[in-house]
Structures are given as C-alpha cells and as structure tokens.
Amino acid sequence: MFTTYKEALDWIHARLRLGIKPGLKRMEWMMDRLCHPESKIKTVHIGGTNGKGSTVTYLRSILQEAGYTVGTFTSPYIEQFNERISVNGKPITDQEILELTNIILPLANELEETDLGGPTEFEVITAMSFYYFANHPEIDIVLYEVGLGGRFDSTNIVQPLASIITNIGLDHTNILGNTHEEIAFEKAGIIKERTPIFTAVKHPGALKVIEEQAEKKKAPVFRLNQEFSIDAHESILKGEIFTLQTTGHTLEKLEITMIGQHQTENAALAVSAVQYLNEHHAISVTVQAIRNGLKKAYWPGRFEVLSENPLVIIDGAHNDEGITALVHELSTRYANRNIHIIFAALKDKKLDKMIAKLDEIAGQISFVSFDFPRAANAKDLLKISQSANKFGVEDWQPFIKEEISHLPPNDHDMLVITGSLYFISEAKPIICQYLKNMTISL
Image (cartoon, rainbow, N blue to C red; front, top):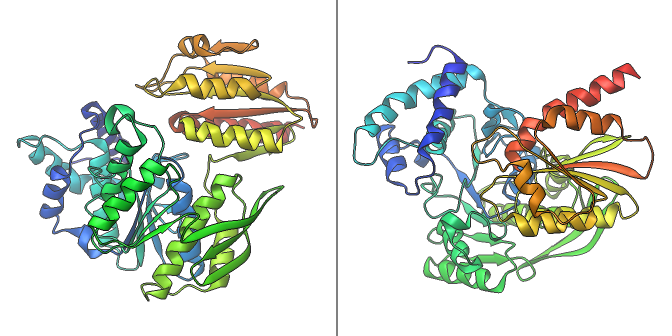
C-alpha cells in the first residue's frame, strides 16, 4: 500500500514500461473484481484523431450550464496529472488519487500473476476513473475520451448514451493501420448497438467504414455536412462565430472562445449530441445553456494565447492534422507577422510532412529536445527541416525564456510553441511563470 501521493504516482508512471497492450480482457477482469462500476454510470464516449479533448470540453461546459455535475476522463494532462479524472472541470485531489491507487494496486498485482499480464498505465488510470465516478452518486454523467484507437481501448467497456468520432487522421499508424480506412475501423469500434454516433469525419473512405459499422450495429448516424452543418462561420479576435443547422433546428450566431475553424466542428458535434439526447429525454438542456456553455468552454494548450504583448501562443499540434489546422490559423490570422516556431515531437510520428508545413510559414524555426522516452532528438528534427533559418536546441527551458525576452512588443513578431502534448504539458507552466515574472518586473 502507498502512503503518499508521490509513491502512488511513481507506481502509475512506472507502468509505462509495459507499453501499449491493446485488448479489453484486463479491463474486464478488473471491472469484474470491482463489481462492474462502469455499468453504474451514464456516459458519452468520444473518439477520433484530433479534437477529442475540445469536444469533451464543449459537452462538459454545456451540461454544467444546464445544472449537471459532469465527470470527465481525458488524456494526456496539460497542467497536472489529476486533471485526467475531473468533476465539473476540477481535477480530483491528491488524496483521492492515493486512495484510488491503493484500491487498484492489489488487483494489478494479482493480474500480473495471470496469463493476461499486468495492466498498463492507461488501464490502471481508466479503472481508477470508473471506480471513482461510480462511487460518487452526485455525478450525473461522465464524458469518456478514448485513449488510443477505440475498438481495443480500455475505455471501450462502456455502454454510452451516445458516441462521437471527431475525425480520422494518419496517426499511431504503427498500431492502428496505415490507411484512413484501417484507422477508421479501429475508431468505429466504439459504436454500440442502437446507440447514436455523431461524426465530423470527412475522408470518404473513412466515413464509409463508419457508416458500415453503424449499419451493422443499427446505430443512427449523424454526419457533419449531412445531418448537421455549419454556416456563416466568422473568425473574431478571440474565437469563432457560426450558425449550426441540425434536423429541425437552427442555432444562429453561436460563439466559442477557442480559436480555429476546426473548433467550430468540435462544438457542432457537442451541440448535435446534446440536442439528440435532449429530444430523447436523456438530459434536459436549454438553448441558453448551449450558448453559455459554448462561450465559456476552455481547454488548455489548444491555440492558447499565453501573452498578447509580446504575442506568445502555445498549441498541442502533435500530428499532421493538428499541424495543418495550426498553419491554417496562423496564415489566416497572422499573415503579416514574423512567426518564430519552437517545435518538439515524439519520434514515432510522421514528422516530414509536419515539419514541411511549419517550414512554409516560419520566419524562424527551432527544434528542441525534451525528457520523455519517445521524444525525438532536436538534431534529428533539424535534419528534416528545409528552412533557411533553423536551429536545434537541447536545453529548451533557458532557450524559450531567452526567445520570449527578445520578442519586441510590437505587431510584427510572435512566438509559437507547438508539437507533442507531452512537451506542451511540461512547458506551459514554466512559460506562464516566466511571463508572470516579466509582468511583475516591468
């Protein structure tokens, strides 16, 4: 048994050595021993390549505005580990993490001795979340974000009120497949019998796979640009405005404060799911709650402006689709700026396309190493870049601080820190503290 939060966290993180072990048998074994907590909670299940966390945030914010107490399970974390299991956006406490770990520890040890083998880090955290939410009756609904893929993801033991697949991109190809269709098949594994599925997938082949799986499960399908659509989209200084058309409904001038056209799609998915559940009496949400919830929704590390003067933006664009969205927004909103990009990545990503896109818009691009088992080395990233103004840096902390301090307070220069969410989670608090100290010293 663990006596401190640090001991518990160290044990959880040490399970990373087990890597990724797709399959549901270990989760089912643990749930059986815990008297199936996953069956005692109402859930919505969210999968996809990008946009899962943002869609969860829109859903949570809308449901909170409607008076519900909402649990969320998300990954990875940005500011602290505990946020992976949250209630109304507030991470559970260190003491609760300690207690949950001590509940799962004997199960993990026992499972280790079976043919199934010990649970992975993600399976341990998922099991902790199910136990936590099931034993807090004040929680009305829980939003579960898929960790990887869908079909064999440890969250895929839920029987949700609705499922959402945000989009499909070529990420984690070493595990999920090399084509959009193969990856879509894995993502579509979260579709359940007669349970509505909402999707913003645009790739024709991937969408066809989702439609086929939905038909097999007799699951109603709601597709972007078919059963629901976005009109009159307008980018504003601090967000987006759009009109949402759904079957029988038009919601005009919905406003979000998260930046990017792609965020309108994530918001549209959330609202469409809410409206469906509302009409089928699973929840009760007013139009005003939808409007207020969208406007208040905030998710850290997604095109987040940390400072306006000097302009510093942080964005967890960790794959090709994320980089494409980032480049689009930077090109649209800051076409006249000199953009300095600082980029860190995991070495198992398809980096050549990502870096090529960043090269196109960067006045200067710097590649940094960071301390993570799968992190790419700055020198290797530097070799991929074709930029005429590129740098490789091993020690990122003093480098970022120096770059911020040299940013002139004008409307011409800006700094964008992007790449792996693991890097963003490590860098953001340090950057924020430095910016705060800069402000105090002025």
